[in-house]
Amino acid sequence: MDTNVLTELGLTDGEIKVYVALCRLGETTSGPLVDESGVSVSKVYQILDRLAKKGLASHIVKRNTKYFKPADPDRLKDYLREKEEELKKKEDDLDVLIPQLKDWSGTAINAETAQVFDGLRGLQTARERSLKTMKKGDEMWIIGIAKTPYEGTMTPYFKDFHERRYKKGIFCRYLYNDYAKDPHGKLSATYPLSEVRYMKKELVTHAWMEIYGDTVTIGINKGKSFSVVIQNQEVANSFKIYAQLLWSMAKP
Image (cartoon, rainbow, N blue to C red; front, side, top):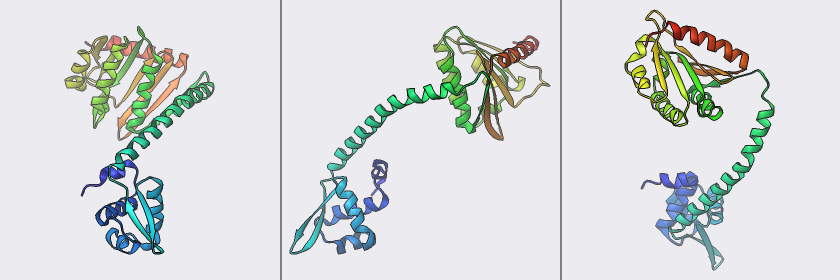
């Protein structure tokens, strides 16, 4: 019997074993339940108590002996709905908390801020920041794109990101390593609000720069994956000068 769905509902391994055993036995004392479930007698009463609190088990007393029985399995759907209601309540609480945390985090950002985001999730977090801060008509530069950013599982993410970017009305200039032209550069060239160029063949990079607004992101997905995000208008202006120079030397 596949009981993975019960694990996803939040039941522990012991709770699942005892509940399934109860369903098999029906009304029973603790002795047969211990044998059927494989759960020690020292733990079975604790588990039965937790199941009772979840509405999945109950007991009666006959002739000074406790008999336990399972709730109807349909109760599992009720339990799922209750969990969904709890999650919805937590979501509502988060909707209140997140703006407060954003207010606090906003006060912690100085005129010059650098952050490091580790791993592939970090690369995505750093990239998502651009869509949150940019608006229609803004422009971003992505300079020095090699094949390495697309290694592993990142290609679908980058494709999805740029679909959302151009739907938001943000223009992007891509400067690729020459060897990354096929297929990555060719794909980027098909996106609306995009312009693609290629560096000279002897220029090969595994790090890339993203420049937009007052922000520069340096990304690496070669060996260890991470991004460094620098938020400073003067720094961003300086990097944009480098980008424009490399762009002028590149070929379509």
